[in-house]
Image 1 (cartoon, helix red, strand yellow):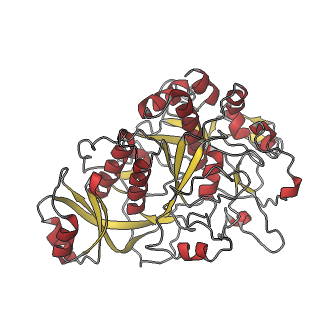
Image 2 (image 1 turned 120 degrees about the vertical axis):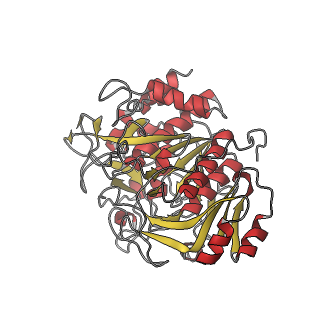
Image 3 (image 1 turned 60 degrees about the vertical axis):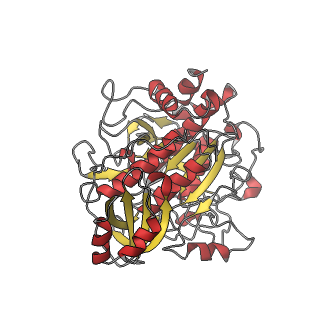
Length: 481
C-alpha cells in the first residue's frame, strides 16, 4: 500500500441520508428487477470514530459471529444475529448502528441487446495501432461525440501507470480487446458468501481467475475505459484495469461488498474507482449503511482516488425524492447521466443530435455532475452503445444473451446496450486519461477539469439533466496541459 497516500479518515459521515425502502425476500431467491433481499442474516455494524475496542469480541458477546472488519473506517459485518443480539450490540458503548446487510438486484436492464456474431479471423485492426483502426470503431458514435479521437491524435492514449478499479461483475481478461490490460494480482472476487459463482468459474477450463465475468456488464465497462482497440476502441488504450467482483452473474450483491470493494481499492493503490452500482435504499431507514458507504468513500478520496458512478436508469427526479440513496449521492463521487442520438441513418451513422438527453436517465441538479454517452433504443438500433462481450457469459436473458457462447456461434465478442453505466464508463475513461496528464493523488483537480471542460447543454449553467455538461475528452485533456 502507498502509505504516503493514505491519511487518517476524516470526520464520521452524517448518519442521515436517502432512499426507497427495501422489500425482504428469502436469501438466495432469484430476484426480479428492483427486488431486494437480506443477505442471509448478516448485519453491518458502524462504530464511533476512533473506537478502540475489540470489534470481534464485542460482536461475539452480543451473540453474533464476526465477519469482515474494516478497522480504518470503523465498520464490520456480523452474521447470525437475532433481534435480541442486534439490540444488545446496538446498545453497546461505541456502536452507532446495526442494520441489515441488504442484497440488492439490478433494476430493469440497461438496455436491449443486438445479436452480433464476430469471428476473430475477420478483424483487420492491428493491436497497438490507433484506436480509430478498431474493426467496429465506425459504430462508436459515443466516442466521437465526446471528441476522444482528437485527444488520441494529440498522443493522449492514457498510461499503464494509472490503475482503474472496476467494481462490477468481473472482467473477461482474455478478451482480445482487454488481454494484457488487467492486473490480476490486485483483482478480487467478493461474491462467494452468497453465490456459487466462484465455483462456476473454477470449473471453467484454463484455471481462470475468480473475477472472470459470467455476465458481461463489468467487461463492457472495462472496454470503455481502456481497450487494445482490436474490435472496439476505449477512451484510453493503456490504462491498467483491476477487477473487484462485487456482483454475481445476476448483478446482485450486498451493500457490504461495495464497502469492502472501495476499501480494497483504496488500500491497493487505486487511482480511479468505477462504481457500477444498481443499489438504492432508504436513507432514513438505513442511516448506518449510508454512513458506512460514505466512510469508505472518504477513505478512497483521502487515498487519492477519483470515483465515478452512474445516475441510474429509472427516470427519477433525484431533486425531489429526498429519501433515496444511490452511490451517486456518496461523498466525492462524480455522478454521470446519459445522452443519446435522436436518430441514425444506419449502424455506421450518420447520427443526429448525439447530445440529446436519454429519456431513461435519472436527473436532478442536486446529484448530476456531468453527462456521458449512454445510448438509446431497441435491439439493432444504431443509437445503442457498442461494448465488449465476456465470452464466458452465462446470462440467457436480454441484454447479455448475445454474449453467451453457443454451439453455433462460440465466439461472440461485442454486443450493444444502453444505460447511464456506459455514460459513466466513458467518464471514467476520461478521468483515467486526465490522471495520466495531471498526475495522481489529485481527485478534486480531476473532477474540476472534467466539469470545467464539459460542453454546457440544456439550461445554462448547472442543469438537472446534464449537470455541468456533456464530457469532452479533447477539451479536458488539452486544456490541462
